[in-house]
Length: 348
Image (cartoon, rainbow, N blue to C red; front, side, top):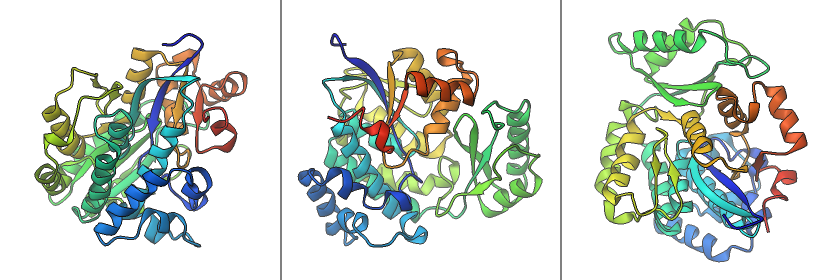
């Protein structure tokens, strides 16, 4: 690391981060990135889809439209990648890149394992692919109390219940994403309904059915994986320029990562198996000990999950929400580019 610089772990967002407040994000922050926007718009136009610029520049936000994978994915990729380009490299050395779920595709582009155009094409196609995927969806449940301390035994109880429900005839239920203080379950309608009906008492927020989300990171996405593997060959990939931490906590290192392995993980493993975002964060900070974590926009909905993952290993002595809030006041460790006041300390 260059003298005087801060090392940073960059976190790429997934679905659910471009919401009503983010409408116009590209206009507000990235009107100068004409080549990036032209490339994204061209790829969308060639597919006969509304361009990123038109979607971002719309007068009104509609959950029914903007939560769809074929709309949300290209918007989030473009905003996040543009934010990555805005990180002030005179102040920050990027030690590693990770992401949540769809954020893995963005991480590939940020780390240089694919170029921007291929990264956008992958995200755009996978957003459309997932929208046409298997029936079913995702439910988000909370494991923590008001101070972000995990309720003893709740994780094990939910895991046992999900396994039992998934073994019933005509029921499918899987752990989709581990967000430290929250879990996302994927399943068919029967499996999700059973989970909601039979769940144990939970602290905090009520379980949430995620709008327009398929049964991601589960075996129900097999056809989606098959289509991706047929379309995206290992030739799309290069060795990353920056270490990447995936949804298993595995580190893909420069000059030590094979294109065929990256393709197999990206279009099979991470589509069909649990995405452990909490482990990705925990491995990344333990391996690289960054001075800061930079969360790319749009939005900042992953901030709580990142903090809870840090609390889970007591990183920097953190044991609770109040500890994390005190740290953010005294020496901000997590910088969310979707927050104006924190963005100012990251960009050029």
